[in-house]
Amino acid sequence: MTPAADVLVVGAAAAGLSTVEALRRKGFTGLVTVLGAEAHLPYDRPPLSKQVLSGKWEPERARLRTQEVLAKLDAEFVLGEHAVALDPGTRTVRTASGRELRAGAVVVATGVRPRRLPGQDGLAGVHVLRTLEDAIALRADLLAAERLVVVGEGVLGSEIAATARTMGLAVTMTGPQPAPMALQFGTLVSERLAVLHREQGVELRLGTGVAGLTGKGRVSGVRLATGEVLPADVVVVAIGAEPAVDWLSGSGLELDNGLMCDARCRAAEGIYAVGDVARWHHDELDTVLRLENRTNATEQAGVVAANILGEDTCYRPIPYFWTDQFDARIQVHGIAGDGDVTIVDGDPATGRFVARYERDGRVTGVLGWNMAKQARLRRAEIPLSGGLR
Image 1: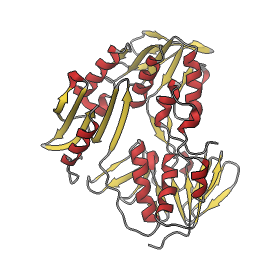
Image 2: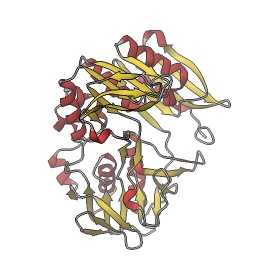
Image 3: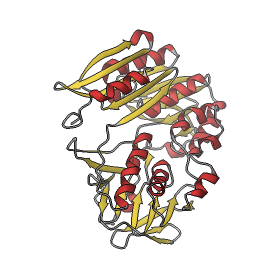
Image 4: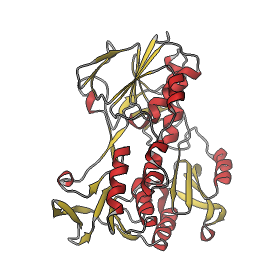
């Protein structure tokens, strides 16, 4: 494959920035343009639900790189411009303002956008959390509130509930799963997480769906499917996210829970995807994956950069993510969730342990709860070939 002479990266968050850095690190000297919908230079999202929301960090501290470091990348950042269309044949991106950007290779790194509840946009006090502005607005509301209801028991909902509780709010978490992060951790570990949240004062109203919100002008509560209303001064909706691919409609590219790619993260000739928006074929696992985490954004960017430069590299990671809640740092290598779970190091009663996940006799993942080193060592027990299907 002939390396591209210039590269356009659509998306100025972690995945987009990591792609630019990988290109320069590998010796690419051509023109690089980064198109970002937000007005901010690249910043990190994981701290938004923790350090920024709690006030431990000023928002500026979430920036991924200083101005000086970004300047050394010699890339043009076009910020505050939404991409609205892509012509894969000419590799041309059109923006909402009518601007057209063309390059030898286009990298789609537009991420995801939060799902919302019907009617929430008409009520003050209802928030999602994805952007820096979202975190700032939510923090301002929390500082003036007493009662928060978090709709959603996944990673983001659990982190927001933990942060708000440390800020002194009365916090209720609700959602259809039986325990926080049950889908990600499975029964044994998610029940231990439920114990932690309860010990810290979070009220868990799980195992039931949400029918809607109450209030006129400003939210006053969350109505459960049972008819019960949970009173609230502030509500956070954390019910997952959808890949930001609507702007690719009509491009002819395959869109299915993300931008579909081959094992090289290539959606079409000269068109690649990286980060939360990318759904690619994992050759070792013989399945398609889309991962929403910071580590994936960085690792996948390296593979995309290599392929743009003419290499022939497949992306075959062992998935990894982490979450910080109260005094627990939980790290997952591979895939947890369903399957047989065994505690192989430590003891859950002490707040330090490693759990090993198996399915059909194969190790699919390891989870460390305040045992980072031990979990990392046991990562070697995960076989890639056929192990995580």
